[in-house]
Amino acid sequence: MLRYEIIIYWSSKDQVFVAEVPELPGCMVHGDTEEIGLKNANDAIRLWIDTAREFGDPVPEPKGRRLMYACPADYAPIFPGSLAETFDRP
Image (cartoon, rainbow, N blue to C red; front, side):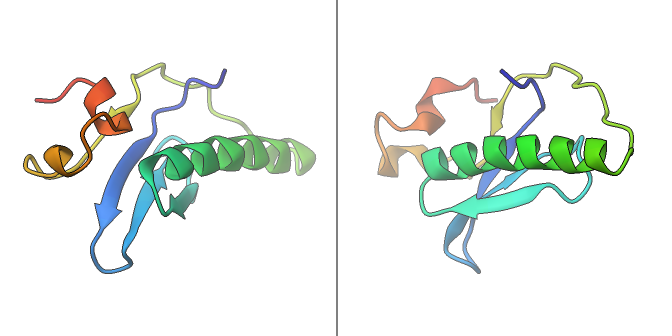
């Protein structure tokens, strides 16, 4: 399992969940649900690493931070039982 930090948030402009991997420059994907966004992010991480290795570029070691879910405080009740409820919130 890859241990890169993934930040998932809703984009009102694009009407999709965006998943960013801050430790891997340019590694950003989207999905119609937070679960699809997370799956797409993991696929993108693997592709990013494979491409970096193919071109001899360095691959940063993951810092091992927890997966984070970012959304407005009033967002979670819309999707009870969703991925959003499985992570710590401030």
